[in-house]
Length: 207
Ligand SMILES: [Zn+2]
Image 1 (cartoon, rainbow, N blue to C red):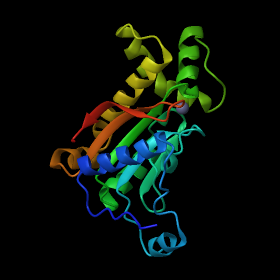
Image 2 (image 1 turned 180 degrees about the vertical axis):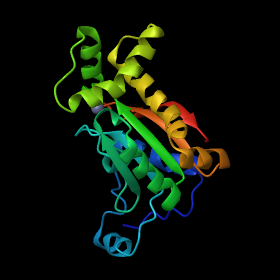
Image 3 (image 1 turned 180 degrees about the horizontal axis):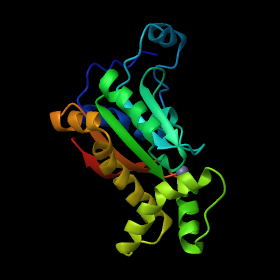
């Protein structure tokens, strides 16, 4: 397997590489690039991933698989409902500011348990126990925004939540905002379809 070289892509080029990998995954013809022992050895000296994926922790949304990539390619952060907190922001800033990664992909998906929990809490007025309430609280603004736009289905609310998260990143993080303005970073918000494996862009900045 020839390793796929990716030298300093622009944000748009990085997204194109991601779409190409996803197309292979969807077509059930993955190349599994950069997953062999030679790649493992070269990457032990340092990493230069070309894309950050900030997605949901759902077991069915495995970043390297759905974008057909390997070791050292993707810098991945996942939380339930891809909710942001200061640790996540610090991780994303490490990716863009320290590792110089040109792309952040915010990845939501259909049938998301976090979105469903927020919808249930909104409808019933009851919060779930423990730190589950933190997840619900951070998805709820997207439920409310979607409802104001007459969007009440789970998929529509998920897409609203992805778009809101894309907007929130440069607002909450000065480092990310500066990179976006300078053109060295792009952010794509995408919705992953569990059944057919496709990703659909629902928001983008800087591409
Ligand atoms: Zn989810």
